Image (cartoon, rainbow over all chains, first blue to last red; front, side, top):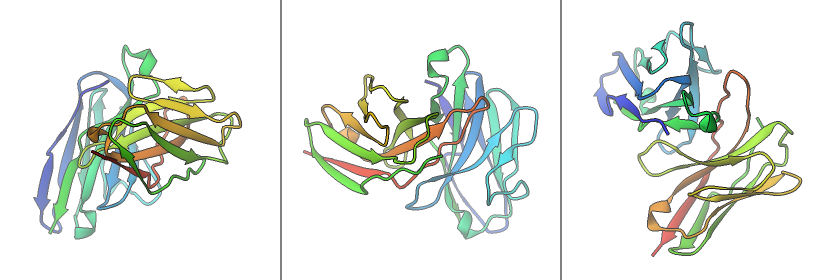
Length: 119
Length: 112
């Protein structure tokens, strides 16, 4: 499986500020995704990070609030903009389609998450 | 993607088999059954997936009924470290990748 790291692992932020979360994978991957997990709830997909083009957002999520970058096949960022306490969640990066691992082509692997608290 | 139904919680004794059921009565012919688990404060971990045949790997076995309307994840010898939320997900595989739609899952507690 892939080794996925996220930075920061946690942060406490003030209302109205923005935070950029980084996701780094140790091998090239086809797909990268960003999920949100609000306290006590299940995971919800925010968007698919597309390399070389704009991210594909799920219903209820917009680019102005959650801008995403994916400059190459191993790295992506998610920014949570103009934060409010309702944005307090765990944000998770996931990847699929590991290069050189055709047997794991349809397995999605998750990073450890970034725990965000907005005051 | 088809909807899944799982019991909210289950208990299992350490060393015994844990059998986690999942109903997916509206599953389509091109949809796979995936299982993930999430140990507290960690990212979800892939366990196993299958289309219609039973599958086994080093972590678990997946039994899918012949009509594919339900499945069971089996942890053959549960340990305390298997305590987690287990998610059953039905997913259609598309050429450009596809989303995982997480439900509420089953909280499995393995007791000593």
